[in-house]
Length: 148
Image 1 (cartoon, one colour):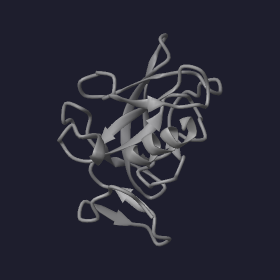
Image 2 (cartoon, rainbow, N blue to C red):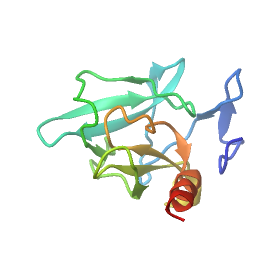
Image 3 (cartoon, rainbow, N blue to C red):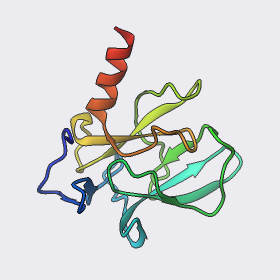
């Protein structure tokens, strides 16, 4: 079951997973790239930096799919700055991730409103097993349960 996804704005794959069709940064810039497909659907375009260089990365818009297209790989668990490719501002922090010290989930909004109840999160650690499309509320509630 997928939480907080507006089914009118998204489509389902044949196996019932949600495909995000609208994705925005905190300034309302469109992150969907119709020209670059990942896993057969338009991708979500992000700008990543390791502090030395920047590159565009296209991630799958399918919930639970880790697929991505990129030019240069980073060492496992490199902490990256995840930015909007239009305004080049860092995406909003949702919550810490426990994959590696200093890692965090950042927000990709599902509409132009800057509202955490309508966003998904990805981890800023390269190849984190949690770096998939997931509901921000699910991430926050998972962390709250863990800390209780």
